[in-house]
Length: 428
Image (cartoon, rainbow, N blue to C red; front, side, top):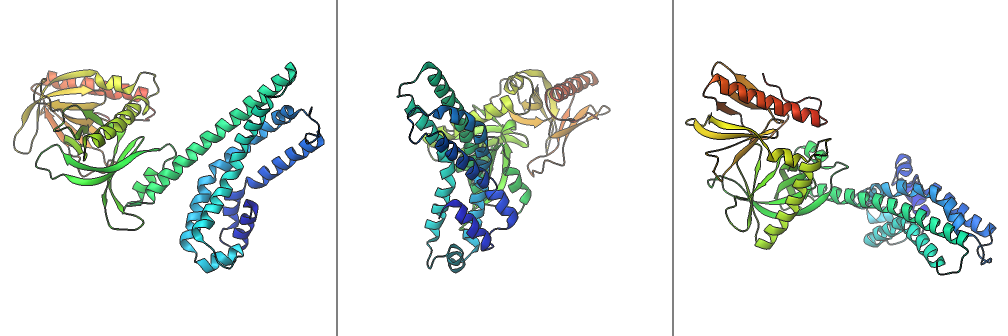
């Protein structure tokens, strides 16, 4: 069977609807018509018999129409998704009847359809190979120019198709991850399925909050280009990973303060003591460190700014610092506080190795009590994390409080000017 015949059988057997047929096979008639016309042009020019046939000129005329392949490639993952759905929801008897055979091997059937799906895409590289082979023949200067032009055009189309194929394959990879996840919140699963998101790495790590009193948990992590997703593992055939939460890499900061050689430590809003991830070996730790460091730098650099200046450079610059008293559960403690970019960090002294925070001004509203000289960082409702809490910082006098207000508002204004956000947190 060819792909068009599979299309007809799936439609006739009501395994796909007419709308699904248009979505999955909508570009097939155009592809068939395009290549039938190209074949007719080759015959008309006598390219099967005439050694002087001007094949490059025919390819130059064909190339603009080859853009239709991008639409076909973009729908490739939709077809695979539908194919898997059919495999999971139809019995052998109905599938055999639909395909017109007595007995059907489901695995071989799926592989055969996938092989047919990729064949149209393989045609373009073969065109390029044909044109490159023609360069071995003798040509006049004009003919060679046309041949080189045809090769460049076909190479450009092949590059565009490969990029579309790469994006499609990445969507397949992310989709396969989501298919393994279980979550009571459908919102989280939809959040992961974003067109820009790419899978980077995955594996087991132990996760522990910075305080040694916390018991470490062995969790399964999925690293994407902008998210670090962590899950518990359950005994389930299709969805073994239960989503706990995820961390956005744009707010993640690796630190050099690590407890041992198999661990990574980083700061994240809401985790005041930081987070420790522990691998099973130094090699695994180094692999995670390499992937995380690269993606974090990329997110800090290209996350949400319009300017060419990297966000990471802004975050390294301390805009304001000084001592404030932080409210604790039992007593207030004197802390050395720093404003870096749009985040607040604090530590016992400027020389302390342990830095707590960050408290992101983008995730907290900042409230001012001038009468009692304190700043309150109240978490926003949209950041649904049980780990986040409100923070209180007391100033020694009104002048110092006003300086902090001025610099915090300046940091917020600076970010709003650089970012695509319509509005930021206000001081009230």
